[in-house]
Image 1 (tube, rainbow, N blue to C red):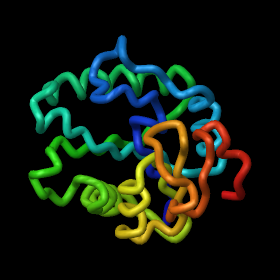
Image 2 (cartoon, one colour):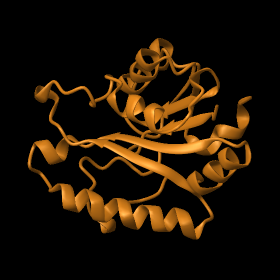
Image 3 (cartoon, rainbow, N blue to C red):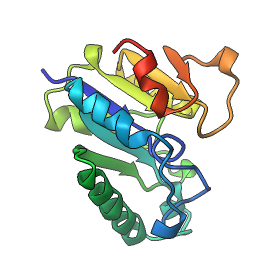
Length: 173
């Protein structure tokens, strides 16, 4: 079985600027490349799971998201980072789908396609819904970062709270 790192996008990988779908608006969080290289060295498979309700709300098109994702993955490749898969939920919150976090559809699909050991896997996100998704999917370890959405650190259900993904080396994986 393979251990995985499930990574939220907006607020963890890039600065959350409300519905980021254009390359010119995409800004990598400081230290994200080094952090992902570190996770690879620790033999984690890397997966991005992201709610993209801007598609369901018609703020942008699926093709816009796919174009940005392709560019982002090329940037990771330039830095020797392999993202095994990007899963996204294109639905608005009202759609009541199975893929929108905190529901587990994205993680479930990844677990079906890969032999994932959830007891030795992690999820990193910036919202309570990310952490709840991990709990619902039985991902044992969680990290909530302060680099995205504001949250009450004292009420976080995450295993760890970090300032951003660049602080990943401060915890025992």
